[in-house]
Image 1 (spheres, helix red, strand yellow):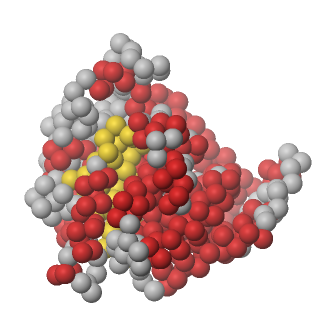
Image 2 (tube, rainbow, N blue to C red):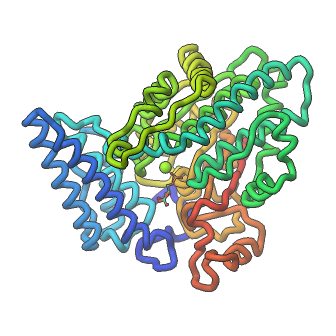
Image 3 (tube, helix red, strand yellow):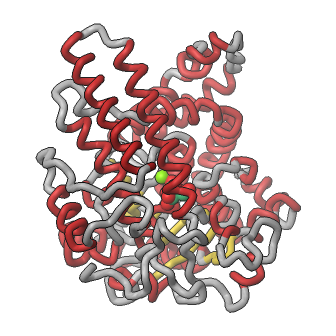
Length: 475
Ligand code: F6P
Ligand code: MG
């Protein structure tokens, strides 16, 4: 497309790309899960008209799954009243008659979720139904141990941050910033065991420890020192005294990842590294687990009433004869502290939620300056834009076959130096594309166990085990 990077995009037809098993195995599973969810809600529905409509939606999802599995052509999206339909259909037309299993990965995957959403938005009774909400909340509930551990640490940490303004310790402050960002980063991986402790003492103690070294070694590019210097310079800049210093976070997943995003946001505000944090969620159910505004509300509700959330047996608990463990009074108090902090920031306008359909468009963020000028202008007024997760990274670099040693600043094209945007990507690798690596690093990682060897596939980059933290200064 007109504004996209030059190298060819990853394709669902390429057997060496993660796009290949994604399209053939993972998409049918995702659609099946959506069908199961909708079916369950339809079956429990007591409004006959709504139930009929629900059955029609289920039938449409079944049809979609058939089309994917039988490699049918992608058809134009039906007009559901939202302006992004025209862009999707224009691009589809320009791509020619593409079929599901021989198509550019990024466009087709975005189209898949946008197409599912039309079935709901075109209905009367199901317009705002989130077919992935059950999965999101279930996953969040199952991350209970890590949630509780972080809640306990957060309280200590925030009091220490507040008291540290009296007796400054620049090295401890820097370590804490790094730690908070790394917790936020690993929240994007499925492996929660990488989380490390968060108090000042623990940070010191853990520095050099096996666990921390291991996690840090898995960060292939780590630009956090530059990011910290940048935010600190803004904080100490007399010209900015009393003015807003904003950090934007383009969110990725709900549940545990949103929880660690809020931990980072709360820390930045408490440490004075930002005066406002703007969170950018999606507007439609997206890539299964992405945050919708309702997920933010659900998370705060869970924190407001932790006993109701964690101690009440779910349908599944009942089926499996499980009784959820009770929370201690201390745990309830620690979760309550988070609720008070975050809801106060939210009520006072320091923590803002700003959905926009630009985040669920079909293509790369190379297009933003031309196609969403207002959004880019708005982001420019902040100090930093954090892009969370794999998909945001794919969109930043266009999901094309870059040489992995290409500098990040080059691979993000018009959002790079000179754009006025300070971009930070916090990404655990769950797709093929990667940039900013040292020469020879990709080759080395391919030789690690399960890394792809000489298969031609960059398998090491598919599992979320490795990460990249890349920064581009816009000035
Ligand atoms: O696992 C692959 C994948 O589904 C990609 O298609 C997509 O980029 C990514 O995962 C979603 O991950 P994240 O939630 O980190 O953006
Ligand atoms: Mg996601």
